[in-house]
Amino acid sequence: MRASVEEAGALLARTDSAGRRRRRSSSPVRTASPRPGSLRRHSSSFREDVGHAASETYLVSRLTFTLLQYLGLGYRWMAQLLSLTIYAILLMPGFLQVGYYYFFSSQVRRSVVYGDQPRNRLDLYIPEDNSRPCPVMAFVTGGAWIIGYKAWGALLGRRLAERGIIVACIDYRNFPQGTIGDMVHDASQGISFVCNNIASYGGDPNQIYLMGQSAGAHIAACALMEQAVKESGGHPVSWSVTQIKAYFGLSGGYNMHNLVDHFHQRGLYRSIFLSIMEGEESLSRYSPEIVAKTSSAETIALLPLIVLMHGTEDYSIPSSASQTFVDVLQQAGAQARLLLYEGKTHTDIFLQDPLRGGRDPLVEDVLSIIHADDAIARQKIALAPTPKRLVYEWQLKLARQISPF
Image (cartoon, rainbow, N blue to C red; front, top):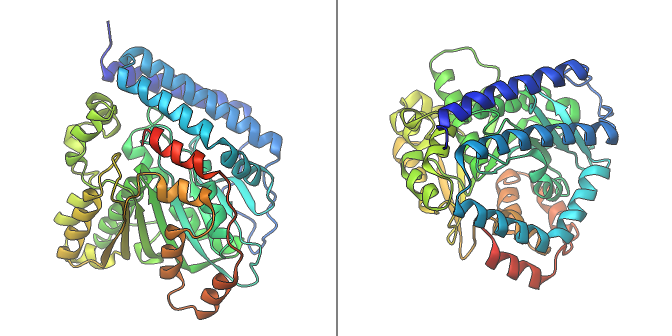
């Protein structure tokens, strides 16, 4: 007989606490602050990174299997898992090349600690040419609130770093390690670290941008709106919304009330999703669209330019989710715009298009906003070599047909 989600969550909380105690007793404490004024911060050794990744993989896998043991495995989840496995195999040649860059490039600083929770780490992608302070992109990865990981941003980090942007891919606790409140808190803490420390890595603290993809777009938008509400209410904050020049939301959902049934039909069952969102009563709190609709004029005035980007053939999260959020923001007086990518799916603009090489619409659109007032940077980008293809076209087409996203 299946136990309730609440019982499973209670067991997982105890298991997670035990895992954290073991990890803390066996690992030395590392400081979150880099050495001021130095770009030569020593990154973790490869052995330490592998050990850390193995430890986290073990913990998350154990928690996930324990949850599934209590909730049971449904047909949709099994079908999605099979599709995801085949999808990953087809794109594996590209993933291996990106993985090699991630682990062995001197331009990648892995697992920089920004907080005291197990997943409070971020990866930094540093451009080769950092003779002058670089613009910065704080990026929150997707993963259905369950399988998100900072390394998922490696391809975007590489592409933007090649164009002179420092990228900070922020990791955060996933369900069942944590619920949405923990995820938003982690993301906000990661953004705070970037805002307060990125100058030590060659970043320009006056040119910080925020981006999220899929579930990461939702989490980042929640963190942004929550911070704006706190700041406009005079509460103490560790970073200011005014430090963010623009927010880019890629393939995100922003009104959770409208997505519960949609996710249920796609295999993210209602009971699990509501557990992630801390119950039905919390859906409004963690719906940036509703928060924006009910916020004061002072809160809205603090928001940066908000750019929502969505593929028109996205079946994981329909593009109407971005359209309605943009409409609400504009009606409230915020600066917001929508970029729709005709015929693109949930992962096309973030994954398949960059793996294809050549022109990358997403990167081009992001850079056009970041460098809108920098003619020198635009000229450098125009002269930069075209990214090479990482996966054959037939693999991309077949992966698109099989993709569970």
